[in-house]
Length: 277
Image (cartoon, rainbow, N blue to C red; front, side, top):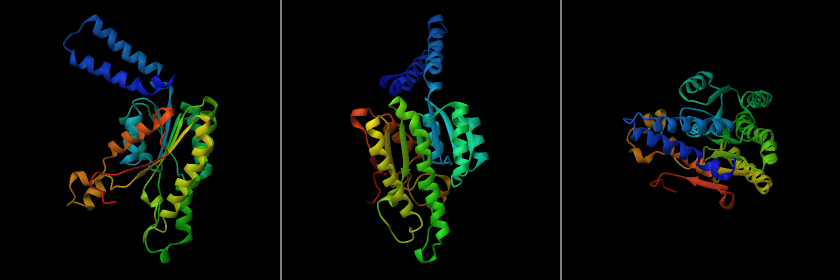
């Protein structure tokens, strides 16, 4: 597949689907031929690409899965097996791989299962996150080491495992989601910010290595309160536009992944228009 097919095949499918819906009263042979064409496009292009997403929770992770499942087979990684199975039943092309990213041996075994089941990832999105919060005086070494393992070590290992096939074909994308803790240390974030800063610098190092080989590596920082049930419940007085919508975040990540090679982004920070920064 060339760049045009990679970026625009989904939009072509959507366009034909819309045309069919707008003419649904016309049950003609021509219309049936269009429906067959949609199926052929899906079978030729959609089913062949693989996207691995870690940290598939009820917010951004699930939204990323929904957005990319329209054009990729999705390998979902998270600790919550019940949630993954629910998403698997709700979303076409989604495959469930329960795994604790802090267990690097288990992660490696899970990656090899994914490759065996659906293929090596064309896109890797590391969205998993772990952190300890509170005064640094009360932070245990174990807390910060656990956070480093999920936020940094797991990302490193996944990039090591996924990148060889990408380099071989001179294509692919590796995206890590973060937040502004990667750029600044503030009180009560000592168990989190250092791991996100290290994560971003690791992503930059990987990008400087892989970009000349045709693999896009990007860091997407989310400077926002994300609209999920527990944040809304904890902030009932906040208006809708105070929150960043998971689907909008997923759309941004989709855009970054599918940027043309002449205009790649490494560092991007997204936030609601009213966010104080």
